[in-house]
Length: 449
Image (cartoon, rainbow, N blue to C red; front, side, top):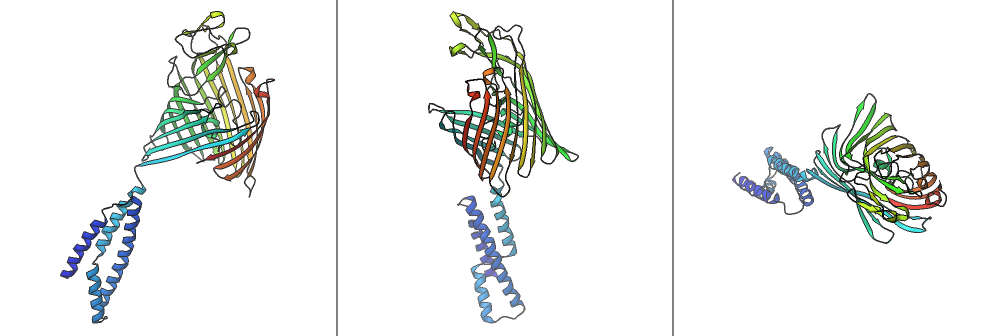
C-alpha cells in the first residue's frame, strides 16, 4: 500500500502539471475532457481487478498484472472528481463575462435611370456586451460616391443598459423609433424591394435618427403583448430655399441625429406597438418639439448657408441673416401595421411631419407639411425560393418637384435566408421632367451577415 500512496502522489503531481494550461482555451478544454474519460475507464479496470482479488478468484499472475497497473497509474474516485472540477473551470470561457459580435449587411446593384452599376453600401454592425447588463452597439455606413470617393457615416452608436426585463435605457445616436420602416426594415437584406418608399429617405416625411436618450422595452398582458420606445433628443434642422419670386420657403427637414442643438429646444417622441394576436402588430408614433432654419439655398445653387451666427450674401449683395431665426413648432404623427402568416406578409405605414409658421422669422415665414404612406404585400411561394412583391406609395412634399406617386413591382429570389436577389420595376408619377417622374429598373444583390 506504500507503493500505492507513493504513486498517488506522483499522479497528483502529474495532474497539477496537466492543469497548467499552455495551449488555447479550446485545446485545454478538449484535452482535459479526454483525460477524464481515459481515467474513468482506467479506474473501472482497477476497481474490477480489485474486486476479483478480494473475491480470491484471480491467479497470482493476474495479481502481478494488477500491481503493474497500480504502479503505472494509481487513481481514486476523488482524483477523477477533482479533475472533472478542473475541466468545468477550464470550460468557463464558454460563458464569458463579455461577448463581441459583428453583424451587418451590404448590397450591390444596377439602376436603369442612371445606367450605372453601384455599390449601395457596406454597413458593418458591432456589438460589445458585458454579461446581461450593458451593451455597446454601432453601425457604420460606407458608400462610394459618384466621383469614386469613399464616404463613411456613423448610422448609430448607443450604449444600452438593461435595467430589467421590461426596460432598456439607450443613450447616444439611435435610429428614429418613429414608425417601422426606418428602425426595422430599411436594411437592404430585409427590405423586400430595392428602394425605400418615397418619403422615407432623406428630405422626406420620416425622421431618420436622433441623438439623446431613449427608453425601450415590452410587456405581456392577458393573451397579448406590447412594445414601446420613448425618447428625448436634439431637435431637427430646417432648410429654406429661394423660390422664383425671390421669396423663401421651407424646403426640407434634416432629422438625421445632430450632436448639437442650435436652438436649445429638445424633441420628445416615441412609438407604442400592440400585438393583439400572433402575426399582427399595430403601431402609433409621434414626435413634438422645435426646429430652426439653419441652411438657406439660394436660387440656382449660388450658395448654401449652414451657420446661425453669420449672414451670407444673396442676390445683389443682400444679407440673409439667420442669427435671429426663431424656433418653429415641429410635430410628427404616424401609424403603421404589419401582418404575417406563413409566407404571406402585408404591411403599411403613414407619416406626417409638420413645421409651423414663424411670425418673426425673416427667412421663411410660412410653415410646411410632408406626408407619405405606403402599403406593401409579398408572398413567398411554397416549396420555392421565389417571392413576388407589390407596393404602392404616395408622397406629398413641401417642395412640389419632390412629390411622387409610385407603383413598385418586384420579384425576389432567396438564395439563403440572408442572401437575396431582387428585380424591382418602379412606375413613378411626379412633376414633369424630374427624377420623380421617371420609371426605372432596379437590380440588387443584398447580403446580411
